[in-house]
Image (cartoon, rainbow, N blue to C red; front, side, top):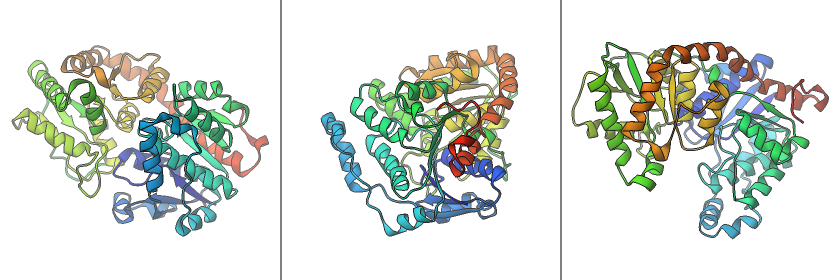
Length: 423
């Protein structure tokens, strides 16, 4: 059996790497013979990130580029929303992508939040287009561990997505809010939809070589992850550079009022060292904003893979994170975590895991004071939070394997769908 994994294009995003690693592991638990085609825009560097990939049946293949026509159409729609009512542009079918999709027995769309408008309409149309190419070629297509929408007032997009989702072979979703949304769109009437958990909850950590970057701290270490995306969204409301100043003020407060060390943890950074969308670059700017080296403030060096970063995060006493998969690495390691949210997914995970959103800070409300209040909450409820995570994680890890049932069903018949599937 050969599976094409769409929805990601490189391991610079360690969340994508975590999803690929754990999706492969889950499926091979049930289908040891399974082989995987993993699209990559930088095969050499991605292969270095996961040197054991061939042992797990993984072949890196050339990732299709987002066509200029889709990019331009997305930009047009952002300026002229009526254009979303027109037919979406088709993806040109290259000979290489046709060959890869033809070789596949199954197409699985990963990526977590690709089926949303968290990025841009062009990105959404691109991944939808690849899935629909698979459907036209007669392949079963599964949307895997996804957050979907909501598309809000963009009714034309919502109607288009409802039609697309209804044509998939199966969907697994990672929050109850997404399940409720798909029910509201009547997708569950035609497509099997299962509540799962993000497979990254299953990522096995790996110890990196040399950990001289670990900060001093008599009371343990607070891990802090910030992202350029959050910085850009914050700047729309508060002005350029404000997030760095607020974060630096918060770190100074931590140093002054506690004995915690602070470790800046990147989770997305281009493997070629580029600055675009790089948490590592943002961390370097934050260290400059602090104006001094301090034994209790350190930054994780470049180049660690997703499993190594999970090991680092798991060593932290507490964690504050903007990247969803950085927070999943912490939560799945029983580390009390404060999430910085720019979309519904952080809220959905927190509601399902804790039953509330008190451990979520909205990006627009991120200040030194809100971070300090969040840290105080983590400290005051640390024992309860650890106990809650310890109790919940066995079920969440089991749910993270739910997608294997969808694979079995797609390769068999709809009559094999497991009990509890929403259809």
